[in-house]
Image (cartoon, rainbow, N blue to C red; front, side):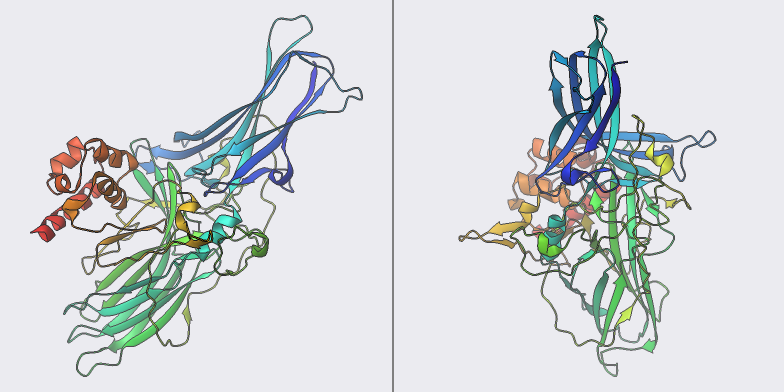
Length: 562
């Protein structure tokens, strides 16, 4: 046999200390993936050709049509998988009439590289119910001696994609404060809510500043309940999404009160509280979007009075969770920083009971995007800190070993070594039943991976600063989980086709649905005339929840026009 050795290894920054091929890419950043083919041959090869392919795939695993797999597949537990290829690059590495051995029989090294896309590169991710996977497939074809038969050898080597530190720094530096004032109505708690940072690193804390101005006449405040809830959603071929339910919140604070009346005649002074909810590294998945899998975190606030077991106020607010920095922030200078964020050391983010592969671990995954949610800080004198219990960070561990064979094993079979996730049916805002006591903050997922350049603007002098936006949480604007704020100005019948398409995305519709609105020239005037049948049959809004949201929004538009 002429080919004695055939292998592929990373080069430079794409080779980790333990031999893995890695890349810090996506999120609007320029990046390359460099590797090399190493060949040891004993005789001359005729017509050798080497082709390299880079692929990104996402898979979800299902035990039935609408039920996620809760453990790895086995003979007694068959699992169906849904696969989507979202990246495919091809590079002809070598093509020559012949290739002869080196005189000293040392390996022949043939380098190659891929220019990775700036967008559509979610981080590598592994769980028992789905994976986001990247790999390089290298194919060698050749002939030997006088034979006309072509021989083929293949190698498939996994690649791990991580979020670049420059993207994390840019996102964390963007203004992302939320300020919200509740409705001052007779039957609701009147309050203000400020969250200084909606974008945080794993291991940090989400700060919540709450001022309760008054309770309804004749009622008393009984309880404040705040949780930080991770949700990972998986989608099948029918576009049905199921969400993994974690056994406990990422962080939780329950504060009871001795039936305290606030405001009005005879009530106590406004109650000012400050809470810190730790982004627990043992549970917290980073925020990201991909074709079949998305990961989000929500802060849920409930306030309950003494006259009902049902919370009087319920709010859910998306929180962007980023992986920790892997390098000193001072070494990352993209010319976009307005302040220096807190520096973090590298930690293993998925060393958890829920994301714990035996041989492949995502140690640095993160979300697709973030921009600038709201802003108008309220100056609040605050009492001593109330915080959730802090869980110590797990020690980093060597989490990757380069496979020696040429075939990739099924990652789902390796992905979980401890207790499986439990699952519940999809609800509008996660696995928590909304109440009618108060509206829940509407949010929609962003379109896939907006480049980071969209979140900054350049002034006349060439300097770059973050874009800022404002949102009214009582209506008019919508908060995307990616962090951008979209406020459509003017009356609804003045909207153009593109504004209506953006409205479709903001309310939770897919890009395909938005495209159908554009194809059918749906502007603001046509929009408010659409019937439920039009939405379902003509425009293809098949998801009941999204369609109902559209119907309610259109009805509200009609009311405002009248």
